[in-house]
Image 1: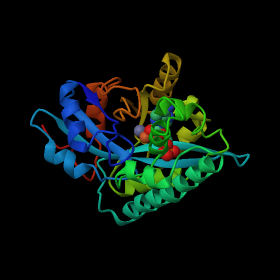
Image 2: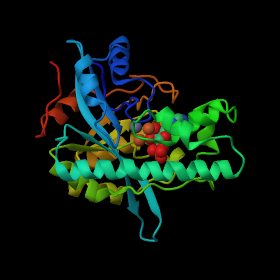
Image 3: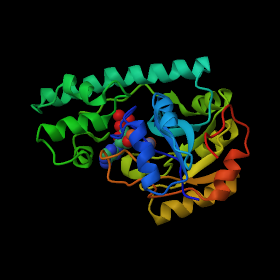
Image 4: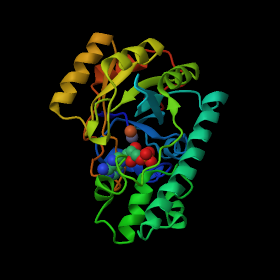
Length: 285
Ligand code: AMP
Ligand code: FE
Ligand code: FE
Ligand code: ZN
């Protein structure tokens, strides 16, 4: 069984349409794929409609969150939510609020870049997003088109980095509230790429323990942004806290170099996840 529990489509910042993702999952030899677009369930229906018999789809989403350190610093982090009720009113409103916040923030990042002479326009960025959740990768694509950088990855090393002056925060969810809200909606929250320090500062084990008390069920152990040392540490923390250790590619189509199925979840871990009560079930065998 090949199981990839974290992927993006054009409903957020991936480049494959949901049906293209499904075809790519089959071509990559996956048996199970989770569709986890940023702050939206917008890709679910098309992915499910395109699903062939041999593929199981786990509907989910990736939520942008933050944690406040004792010294007041904000650390941003991502939560995967699987199998929640898409009609749960509060979580639904929260997704809409997060997507809205991404619009105004994306516009401001573009304004900051344009003010320094970079040839990007909000018009082009929102065209590239095609009505899906807007993210920095769309701005990256516009920068590539304008010939400013060779690829989206290069855009992230400088211009789009959270450490740069062009960066603007989104109005994310406090992470403990997010864990509780996903649970309240019948979902299973898993902390995405918890030790991906290349992206920015990461939270300590104490925060992961507090998230566990709030209802977290798993940690993403195998992820392209984790090196061998990170994976060993996350796996040990998962064991210590009784959390499920998952693995996934965080595939974004051509917006990122990582391939579908580049990291996968062990069948035992997947079984443990499915043994938990949730509002929905995976669709497929
Ligand atoms: P945003 O959600 O708008 O803050 O943008 C962050 C998103 O950009 C992450 O969820 C990743 O999907 C993506 N990302 C982060 N680093 C890179 C990179 N080096 N190349 C392409 N995409 C990236
Ligand atoms: Fe993304
Ligand atoms: Fe993420
Ligand atoms: Zn992701």
